[in-house]
Length: 397
Ligand SMILES: [Zn+2]
Image (cartoon, rainbow, N blue to C red; front, side, top):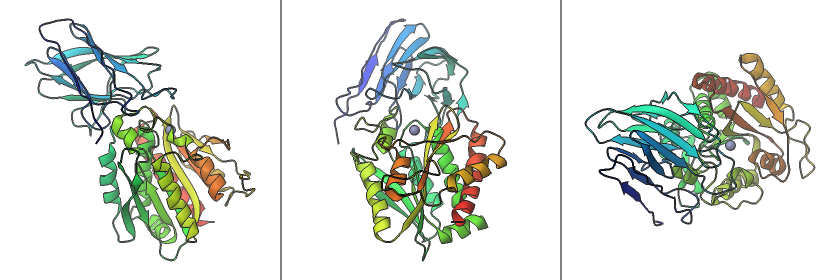
């Protein structure tokens, strides 16, 4: 185990005091758990995904919490998740300012007492700040986070729920840089060489993409007859949590190596990307045909980043089932009332997963991006219809 440093600041008998703590960034690209204690109010990140990088009392009931990236340069997606404890005997109403280094504020605050049910927190945003007032009951710790919390253990429970038959096998695909397991499941279709691949969570705070993947997977492994029939024709690999270090540490974007995993599908400098590449190469070596892959993410809006239908890869091969993605997304657009944006593009040197799938296996892959603030019911409905339609077009191959 690597050494961890715990910060604790007790400021007693002072109505206004300040403390400012820094994460020790030389340990790894991540943040150690923090505990900031003031007279009655304390903030801590001592749970998986927890993340703030310092705190300061700025008034009788006012606190500024600092958000810092794991390293830089970085795509600015200031993640935060912390617990507030009120040690007094009376309810407290406190003003919180979240101040992001190199913001801007991306994630709207949500509150929960159990990390399961979340409520939106009314707030205002500035260039690098989010401000809100929140009531904290004594002895009922309150969690505040940028999105719902989906931690590493959630994925183990989810896969265990999905795997219902002996044809579905849960296993550890490999281990992260810090030794955390990469949970995976294969659903085997006897006698079939065809494979569908689903991956997620390369970027830790991209929770709406993670939600889409859970709903997509729930549909795919449901008892519905179309999906049951599909599972007899296609082998399915599910790797829902590619970056368990980043998820655990509450990183803004990177792995514990301080790198963007979705730029590593050319260099393979991570044990995580190496593990998936080895598994996919082995599928091919044993005669399997990978047909399609989905990689779930979040950004400011719903969008599907795709490979162009006429793409010819670095080995001079066109993509298998070239019109698959256009057909699928066109069909999706006719089935749902919100926009389906199909954004084809490629950059052969980018190290992005979808590009790797096209260049290495000559198949389509799609970066399935969900808006940070997309309605949660819409995420579910879209993912379920997307799954229903995808298996029709994959079947047509
Ligand atoms: Zn992403």
